[in-house]
Image (tube, rainbow, N blue to C red; front, side):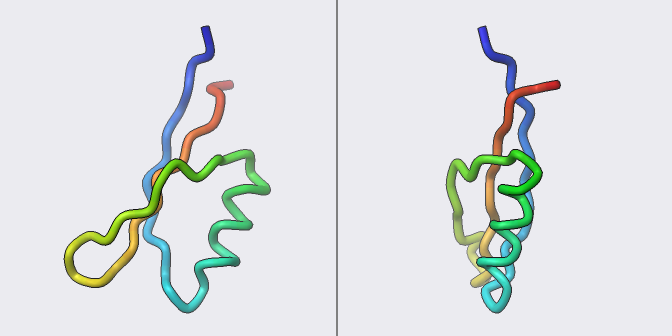
Amino acid sequence: MTLWEYQVAPILNHAAAQILNNFGQDGWELVTITDNGSGNLVGYFKRPAQ
């Protein structure tokens, strides 16, 4: 069974691509992005636990 670790992080609209690429380079997979209700985006990431 795969064990996962999770990360929740703000995604700034003006730098979204760079933020997502940085997480991807560190092995994080984007699960979903949500709006926190005030116009800001929050990304939820996972990767296999080490």
